[in-house]
Image (cartoon, rainbow over all chains, first blue to last red; front, side, top):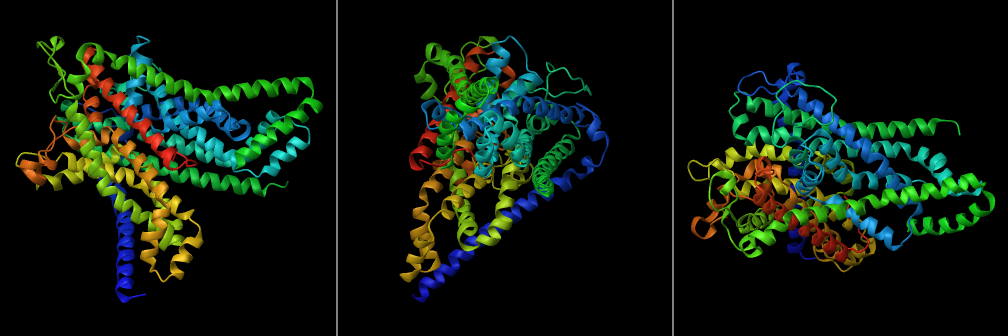
Length: 294
Length: 327
């Protein structure tokens, strides 16, 4: 081993380590920066209840937060049954047939679809073709398209991760495949299923382009209207982060920067909360289930 | 592997079912199987619907505007038609198409070396620390919404770039878009590359060390080439994600139909406002209903993105037959 090669090796590996450390530092800095900048808004109660105030100070993101939660719940309520069903099918029933292969390919394709393509698709199907208008329902349906492949993936992985002795034991006792799934596999997979579903739900916070086209059509909700009507327009936090900084009218608002800082910080806190919460919940559920006498 | 086990288990258990299980349970078993297959088939239906709806809505570009004046012209004046009090509208989309290529090209130039370096640290040089700290951190990275990255670019990056931009510009442009997109796709490329590196057999490295190679030579000439399938998958999927990202780019690129004029302006060309396909689609959101031809032109851009997605998935399948596309 000549000394020159050894020196090159040390330098190259040090450079790569430095890159990794810098990237980590950048991530930590970005999170701290966003939260510190939005701290004033995050700690002001009016931020969570008032509506964005076009043309005057004292904005809040109340309706946007409400719409975000509304669309998250509605879209997940539609995504979970289908995603879980497909996940069970891929994990337990699917062989290597042509239809199974096609379904797998389609799921992978959905996972790669750009949000904005889904937005245009959602606009043409849920709004144009049905003579409807942008609404929280249309936005939720579009999010089903985006989240479904991930729900399928976490469901399939949760069931595949189980030891096959569980399945074999149940079948040996004379249970049907369906009975095995419902009474043995699903309960055992519950902790990882819950973790996975929460992680998928957390992705909803960041979806913007699809909702811009199907939920809000570029408008900002200016009144604190917390109705449950799915046919109302719905702009979410992520969408407004874009709209408030780029469209002409909102940029004229005196505290636009402050508002957007608050929205960005709230998004980061929500996403991190869901991410860490899901992992923590998953781990404690596993512990509790394992502590049960068997 | 486990799929095969489940499959063979299915046929042997079907024998059992026929003999031992009472009729009602058997009926439920069959019905549930059909229902689950239906759930798995929903994805196929959605993909078909997406392709059909986007194509049908983009069709006026073929029948009224002409593919030539769409793909070969850089004159994009969609809102100057009769609906807007003008006479003739133009739908030349070459600028946004090439703009996407420039922005994504810059993003890959920045992201690939960084992501591969991070993957090597995670998988080769510091695997213990990597799995404990680096991988969870990358997962957090993935979770942060892209529009938030765009916002950080808007409030932090643009003021910095404004100093090297021509007077009067705010720093938005292809460089800002490239940086934001690079940050966004680094986790995708790094994770897939690291996974590919980790699965390489230890014998590869041992053989290289036994021949007297240094750690860097082993990584650079043996392990990285062996893992190129996973790395290419990561790069291609990162490319597809970057090409499809809309609002994060819209925040920092300036949304002006202009390509970087590198020959005359040099580096400054990249800190002047530009556009991409997604940004051009986005700025039509308020006119979707009132400007049918402009909307059709935007659906055609979406169709181009759809084609990019299909090509990306095919490439990934080709280089990495057993690889997963969903990250």
